[in-house]
Length: 269
Image 1 (tube, helix red, strand yellow):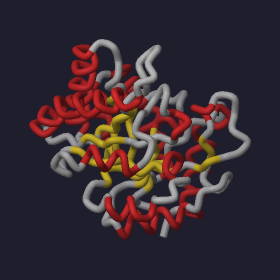
Image 2 (tube, rainbow, N blue to C red):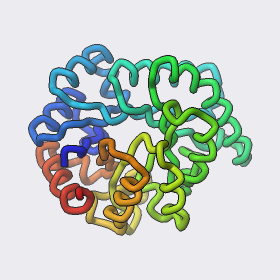
Image 3 (cartoon, rainbow, N blue to C red):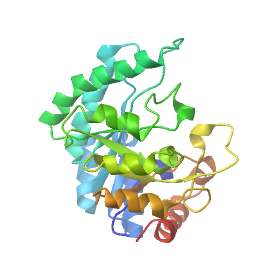
Image 4 (cartoon, one colour):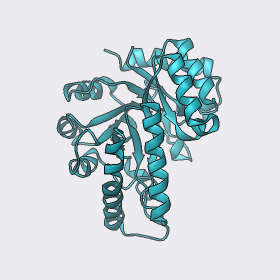
């Protein structure tokens, strides 16, 4: 349980100070920070509040969207994200790499752009001791959010770089379905930068971005995946990251204890 991390998106309406307070009240020792609520208080002040609360920062979300039309703007935004991750002492900067450019059907070309931009950013991240974490996303998001759809694809790209500079995210929501998951997690030994959990629920809502469920409400075998991740040598924090409109409508002081209870029941060893 001391490895449980609350990703801010799980209590989406909370400010960063409110999320920090929620972690402290629940005895949670780690937080996954999102850039927008961090910007609302300022990076320096946010880092100060987190340090004063004695929390670890398991990740900063997010960088990426490498396939955008303005390469200079993409690079500038991601360099800013790297600087923010360094200021927080975050374990990693999560990268949602981006989908197809508007009007494009060139999936191979989009993946090539992702590799090019990552190659430009990796030296900058290395200089600042920030680990970039490629997040493969479920194929339903391939067109608009993430052209890396499997852990294997993310590893193919990550393995071009030092593992301390570029790693991968194992997010149960995105990878649980993969018939090659056991082999790919084993292959990911030394490269798992973040382990995120939430459930796959059915029926899917109309907005599939908000299709994540609380652990135990859906179809994922969390202990099996957690065992695979542990066998691969990952000993870092385990983030609960849930995009769900019904959950977001509840008060944080209701949601956070629920998350801790379900984490203990489904994920903790």
